[in-house]
Image (cartoon, rainbow, N blue to C red; front, side, top):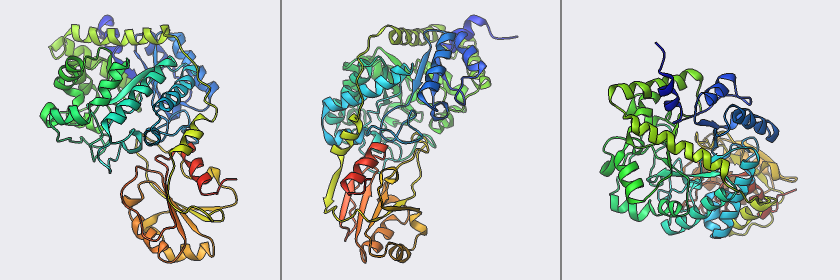
Length: 483
């Protein structure tokens, strides 16, 4: 016996799916016609603007109020520019500049690009306060470590996106900035009291709610004082008592991807996780990136089964689907103010660069980019100075496998510019830098979240606060390496 059509449609109305490739397959379009709330676009869905516009048109032809979402944060997390790197600096760079109106302009420009392509929901901005220097998943995605500053920039980013006609989804509630593990791979724990959260992590969420954010995304983090052993995504104390009642949020609560280990380890799978998230108060369930028709049907069937066995009340699912439908209606009805993005991001990235030492006489340098892995949130997006170099030679090496004497021989009489992300915690990074600087002119470009570590003997230490295409160009210009 198949699912009750009415209940299946109700369940589909709470789901944000995804599909592979540049063209929406028939099943993805059919599900939209049958009531699916929407789809998230990832890098594999993006080849060029005309193709993305064709995809969003095909989905909208199936149902006019479909939600089409994307993670377009600027900086290190980009889907539209995954092949080249973003033309915008990310939040860390904007935070260090400290120009709140500029942050609004940048995010309005991002929103303009999304709206032009038919994308209606941006799973951004990241408003986590990055209080853990070695946070492996937030870092340069954060506006900084000061709650008041992050709150001001978060509100501006939200206002900018929504002025362009794209719904903002602030993330990750109640704050992912104090974690030292990645919720894509495990369930991080934040051992903070509710009072500490209110002082440190929650002010940016209060600010975006006051700014009218249409959506807030949950975090797959455990806060024992509030959530016990479960992640916040499955916690009614977090999603209802804290977010809705205490902070007064009346928009859509979106889950982080339910395929992430931070959720599946706690729930036993994507479908059971969907039920637990709905029961806790979530409205729109982001399934993840690896989605097919079978998985969507499994999740919908589990929700329908939960309605039958008492794990879910129909009124709760109707409330969730209703809020999601209201969000979709807002994206169709809202007006928009476009912003011309010409060079805006590159000019901002130049303002973010911080230089210690003397970055002169480096135009003939050997540029050495140190291999660094990417998070699942970032994806395999190109980074570094390579696209912006003039006559300078660039090589790529693994720090722990590189002989400093061989690098010095290759450089000859040229200085060496070491380019890294989180160089201080890269295996072999500190040792290689110190060995080179002890016997050779060296400059360092740090494109990750900066630490207090500064190697002895380097001629210059350049911090970009991100690794976007714009950040790379800015660093190359400062060092005199551009074409």
